[in-house]
Length: 340
Image (cartoon, rainbow, N blue to C red; front, top):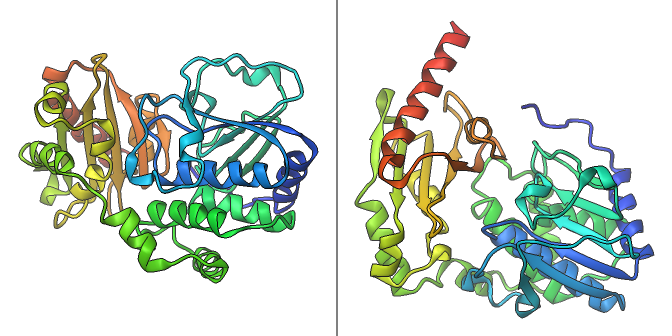
């Protein structure tokens, strides 16, 4: 899927204007919240408080990754799988959600209720009343910073730390190909606002607990590389692994990217069995992969970037790794036929 090369900069001001013109906000972030989702939510929640808005913040996750508990208003984030949307003057704001299905259930895109969608996923379906989506942005935090500056919002140190969190995590500390000159410029401006780079590095990158390492050891013991010149890697954790190690779902964050550190690997998929038996995949890819992470995930109803994506995998746990390898090889063969 081609990224939108024609992003309308006026969308930034439209997003700012609808935020300013509504006094009650309800913020939603996506399932399996990451640094970008939580960073953007934290920054926007603080903007609401500064502006005197009434604000709430929800995610469908049962538990949120404690590595990000330093974020301002982390304690205000609430769990909600099903939500009742009303035409009562509330502005419903979706952050980092490529589709409405990535967050709480109950939103009807056809109803066109008072809603705002701020995102950077190139496969975003533009489901809200106002959509501010640039597929070339490094992160939703980068997008939100641009909304704030377009509307001349005050950005305090707490907001700057939250926005910096999302940029750092979604760019792999500026190592991913989604990092642009604008990304570095925005990071510099956030540092000028008072972000302590060393402290943020410690908070984000040096904050794992022993249980995290135990579940990682389970995952790493199951790594399999395959395909032409071993360009593919997969692994998995099962529900029993969580009970045995004392870890939880938040402990698996970063494992898919760890697989990408294997020499020669161009695409990696990491599978997690949830307690309801559902298998969810986190997929990563880089230049040189015959197909992108987003392309693979969309085959199973998921979505995301071409470099990072996710989906539900429709196989039972006992067959998941076998079927995952088979699906990747099938996709590789289809790409070869297409390009012949």
